[in-house]
Image (cartoon, rainbow, N blue to C red):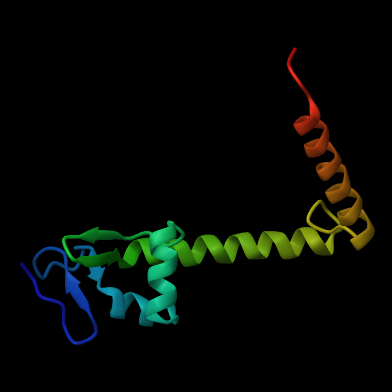
Length: 115
């Protein structure tokens, strides 16, 4: 079994070029440019793909790359929608009205009694 190097990177299989690369906590945090604490909080919550194997967390570099691409695509779509006046762009008044309607619906739901 391969041991992680100084940066927390270890090949999953032999020295094959196509073998997936695994990262430890330190390596994944450096790769994503965030602190180890933030990485662990997000990994435990399921926002960052990873697995705890025994006592160690393991992250696949390919999964982290996919995560970055997904977030970049979502952000680009949201910005594009906001510029065109699509559903992502609402005025403050519209957002307040929607929140009030949601609260009223929740109140009505809570007051209903099944007789």
